[in-house]
Each structure stands twice: as structure tokens, then as C-alpha cells.
Length: 191
Ligand code: NI
Image (cartoon, rainbow, N blue to C red):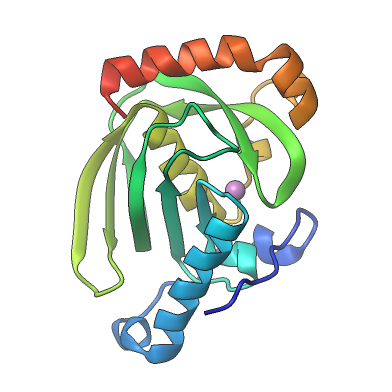
């Protein structure tokens, strides 16, 4: 396993649609190593998730995990989840204003409206089908990661550019209000 370099905004790899992963490719030792590297890099950087194009591999693979994350102390726990060829279906017109950050957009956060309930279908790393409904704050995290596979960053989802803030200014001026909103969402959905 290895910690990979993380691509930053401006690099074209973050702006292209990633390609679908084939069944044989998924089972290969090389691809399984890529999954391990993605997980290790995500954990090293304290990411809540990481998508393969963020480590310069434009394939439809992402990982999510939240466990007392210092970058996102208000986020509910997400057990380690690896998604291959994920597809998200929005199950509601309801949106919540998620304050997002991204390891590929260093030092910035901004508000991206996200659906409060989604269905995710994908394969896991063994090629088994995943089909689940995800709600609340966690649904926002899934939408952010899958967006990366379509060459989208949270900046593209922002409705109001004035919400863009550095992390220190977020903590000073926006965190308290957002944590209250986040807690209400977690209380409502349990995730
Ligand atoms: Ni990101």
C-alpha cells in the first residue's frame, strides 16, 4: 500500500468523466492495490471520502469513511465503504445547504445544496452489488464523491459564490450555525 499524491483543482484529471471499471479489471491485483492506496490516502489526509481521479486515476471508484474525523467533527459515522461504478438516483426534491470541503480544493469550503435522500447502486470491491438508500448529511457526502467521477467539484454545485470561505474563516464565522443545521439533519435522519 502507498499514500498517493492528491490532485488539486486546475489539474485536468479532476475535470474529465472517469471510465467504467470492468469485472476482470476489478478482480485484478493491480486494481485491488489501487483500492488499498485510495483508502490509505483518504485516511492519511483525514478525508471523509476520496475518489480515484483525486489520485490521478480516472476510473469510477471512490471510498468513504467517517470515524471521529477532525476535519468534520459533526459528521455522523460512515463505516468504510468502497463504491465501484456507483450510480446515484435522487429520491426527493428536498435539498439541504451542505458546507463542503474537498482535498482537491485546499483551504476552501462553500455551500452546495444536496438532496436529503438518495439511492446508491454500485459494486463493492469483491464485485458484489450494493443497493441502498442514504439520507441526511451522509447523503451529501455520497453525492460529493460520486460527482468527482463525473468531473464535478463542489464549486460547480454552489448556488451562492458568496458562501465560499477559507477554513479558518469558516470556523470563525459559519461553523456554529452550520453545526446546528447539521445536528438537526442528523437528528431527523439518523445519518
Ligand atoms: Ni472532494
